[in-house]
Length: 306
Image (cartoon, rainbow, N blue to C red):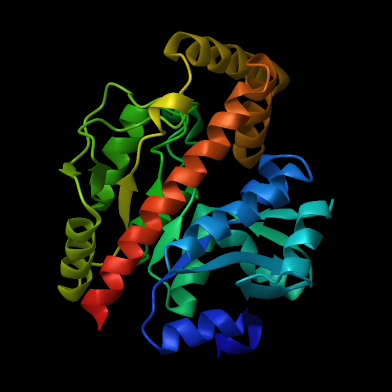
């Protein structure tokens, strides 16, 4: 039924039909994460990194009401320049599709579309989570509930450090989502390699990660897996500088009454401003690093599916 709503790029269709590795990519980083033309350049470079590993990239978005799994060069350019692009999570997908609008997919929406297409590995920057003061606001990202029910592994640089990382981990434990540290015992905090919080399991190679994913889904254990891959040391930010910037941004958001899904774009933009653009460069480099690791895991997972 859903197939009349979704367009899967022929290259992706061919790879999936032949059992070759495919990695899904989200599109909010293109429409809401950075300015043009840097957004398109970054998206293309991420796709190139994945291709260099022998894996097919599939950037996901909604264009004019059609779910797109794998964008053409023209579609990527269009998305990078478009002004009225909705930020789409699970609740938004049916309305953006029905109204024929453009939408950039969040982690949650990208997971849904990836699973519909038969893709089980997804690379992003960082996941959403439990926001600070959630005990009063109940502001919890839909990314987490999606991870609890959708069979897609998410390679990321941990949870964004604007969040309450401790509560995010508690919530993921309740949902039964394993948090794996890739060559680390500590959950990375997006801009920095450390957060002060331990992961559930440390795994040092792509083959073992793939085998754990295969075991989970073969046993019928539904839900995703988080593979937390630290930002390269050369690009991580000073812990005190980024912490001060985040605290300042949070206070300003509170003073302006910015809440819900508007809060993350505001906070990231404010942190970028306060750090003189350094946070954006860190963001780009961690996504590149995640693309490399995600492609390696996809290669190993494809061998298990053969």
